[in-house]
Every structure is written in C-alpha cells, then in structure tokens.
Image (cartoon, rainbow, N blue to C red; front, side, top):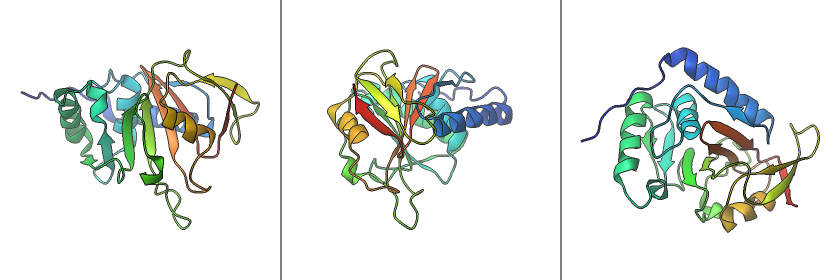
Length: 199
C-alpha cells in the first residue's frame, strides 16, 4: 500500500529557499549548492526531489526513469504518488517531458529529447541526473557564461551518451538541454551555454 510522506515542513519558506539555491546553481555552472529542506522521496535523492518539489506544478510534465528503482517499479510508483500529491505533476514520456530524472548510467538518445525551438528555446528539457558523487568519474574543464575562471569538475560515473552530449551537444544554441546533477543533498548545474572539455 502506498503511503503519503510528508513534504516540506514549511512549504512556502522551504520551496522559496530551494528555488533561490537552484537559481544560484543555474546561474553559476559548476558551483555546488545544498538543498537540505527535505530528505527526498526514494528512489529520488534529496536534491533531485527538492528540485521537482520547488520548480514543478500541475502544468509541468515529469518523467521518472524506471532505472532509478533498480529494476523494480514499486519505489518509482511511491515517488510518483508523493510528487503527484504534493505538486500535482503530470507524467510524461522522456521525449515529451519538461523535467526528467534519470540515472547517471543511462544511455539516452538526446536527439529525441525536447530541446526547444528558435522561437521558444525555453521550452526544452531540464535533465536531472542522479550522480554517483562529485569526487569521481571523468574530469572536465568547465568554462562559459557564469564561470569566472575555468574550473575542473567531476560529475560522477556517467554513461557514454551523457559524456558525449556534454562535450559536443547535438543541438544548435539556443536550442539545448540544461543539466542538474544531484548527489544526496548537493546540486551542480551545467547550462546549455557551458563548455566542457575532458582533462
């Protein structure tokens, strides 16, 4: 039987705090922020859960990858039950979603994902990747808008498709996909304007 778990203890205050932290991460690619107002709806980690809880509502379509549940559907269904109750989010396929939460090990066909249009580039996918940690995996050099000095970052162990897209996106700017890498309570964003190189 699915149970409703508690959401933010102070819904408005906590959501606003997380929103400001997420904006900081998006405006300063490669900079880690902490989202510490909720423990998360497993199998989503705390940061990924709080991104959805802070940015999504009844008009937002969301995809939760079955891979997050370690080949079981019960955990995913429980997370959906809670997010639907607290935020009213609508389910969508990966190709149609506004937000998607996936495992870092998944190989994705990025050409089929929403990348916006020339008229409305903002109508694109925000891809939330559940990371294995920011002290492991390939080392990247990050530069671009919002990055004062090139910095070295790690995003965890990533699938080949995610690495390849980060290095050479298949979409032409201003089209593209924005990434939010989440590990436990930590969030690190990579914008479509960012440039990454393998070190």
